[in-house]
Image (cartoon, rainbow, N blue to C red; front, side):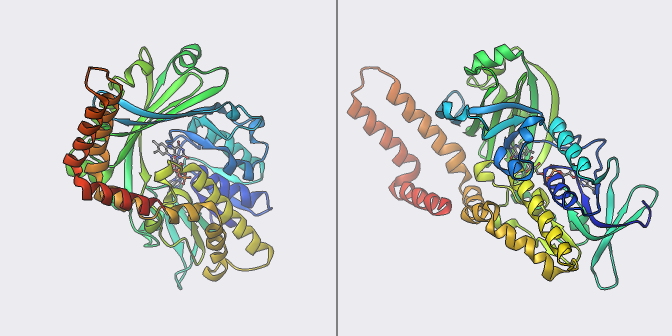
Amino acid sequence: MRNEKFDAIVVGAGMSGNAAAYAMAVRGLKVLQLERGEYPGSKNVQGAILYADALEKIIPDFRDDAPLERHLVEQRFWIMDGTSHTGMHYRSDDFNERTPNRYTIIRAQFDRWFSAKVREAGCIVLCETTATRLIKDWSGNVTGVYTDRAGDTIHADVVVLAEGVTGFLGTRRHLRETPKPDSVALAVKEMHFLPEDIIAERFGLTGDEGCVIEAGGTISRGIPGLGFLYTNKESISIGIGCLVSGLAATMEKPYDVLDAFKHHPSIRPLIAGSEVKEYAAHLIPEGGFTAIPPLFGNGWVVVGDAAQLNNAAHREGSNLAMTSGYLAGRAIADIKDRGGSMVKDNLSLYKRMLDESFVIKDLMKHKDIPRFLHANCQSFFVTYPKLISQAAQCFVRVDGTSKLDKEKATSAAFFKARSGWGLISDAVRLARAWR
Ligand SMILES: Cc1cc2nc3c(=O)[nH]c(=O)nc-3n(C[C@H](O)[C@H](O)[C@H](O)COP(=O)(O)OP(=O)(O)OC[C@H]3O[C@@H](n4cnc5c(N)ncnc54)[C@H](O)[C@@H]3O)c2cc1C
């Protein structure tokens, strides 16, 4: 490998790196992919929901052999306080379609499958190999990478940085900044194993049907964050993600927050009797549109989590990673086809393609959400969840109080907690941020 020259080097074999490597290899480019893990997926953590649409655009027949757990027919959104949850559930038999829209997956298995497709397409994949530094020429253009394999230097026309949110190659060379504590969440996750029939019974599922729960409220202890519970075939993934700056400010420990979530009376019965076999922690980029760094330069592009392409408001990341990787790969192949060089002007094609896609459109639409939620976390993660829970309980409890008195008590509680002006201002600002 020493001093060998490739059309492209892809650093990382996660969702974005595999999509980029595949897109270029199927177009006949000479591609080398480096992965520091023992195998693709060994270092990667996800809930995990796979959004089929993004993968279908890359590998249309992926359902034939991809390791998919359950297809999702039910989504539950819960607002929680200490003892209760107020929920909105959406379940539809329409999701029992021929080509389901969302699946649960296990990344260690899925990434290996994706990587096998990348190899079949002709890419050389080197695992247990860390790219340690970008090589630059005298005029600052990226021309390859150094690796930890006996001082190997590998050269390429372009380097695709698909190194995930903690990747250091780009930050060390000042191509982007290290993510700030208020633009990343720390997520901790456990895998709870249960027999398939028990999972089916607890969640009302048949065959490969799946259900997911996403929960916000006092469970994140006033820190912007969300809990999740996803059903796999024979396991349940359960976790919680909280903004790093919030954890630092409150000195809350992520394990304690997850522990409290697991012991919540609404969650505990769903995982009762399970055996925990895996535990993982990982960062999630949550800075949104304003945290996106420069996406390309002379001899390099950055994709996926490394580029902060993650839609926290909709809990989507892998689809943005795959789409950005795929578009970067296609842009590079197009430039190559035209005989162009991998200079900044030409690589701007990747950014133009990304701007046209749902990735940038969605992140732009929600660009004010992260800042809004961080600035108002006490209201939206403590005060309102408690008020909503009290209101729901007041509504369903029959105790001789007249309905009119109940309504008056409920609205008085809201006005006392936030004042009339506060309520209007929260509603208007939330609507504006969401718009
Ligand atoms: C707990 C949790 C739950 C999530 N749930 C969901 C979900 O349900 N649905 C969803 O769509 N998204 C979810 N996400 C987000 C999703 O996991 C990410 O958006 C996605 O994995 C990003 O893919 P990526 O390829 O950019 O980065 P990664 O998947 O992090 O891959 C980066 C790869 O690069 C390798 N690497 C890094 N540096 C080097 C180096 N120097 N040399 C060689 N290799 C290197 C790493 O080992 C890794 O394999 C979740 C994230 C977390 C943490």
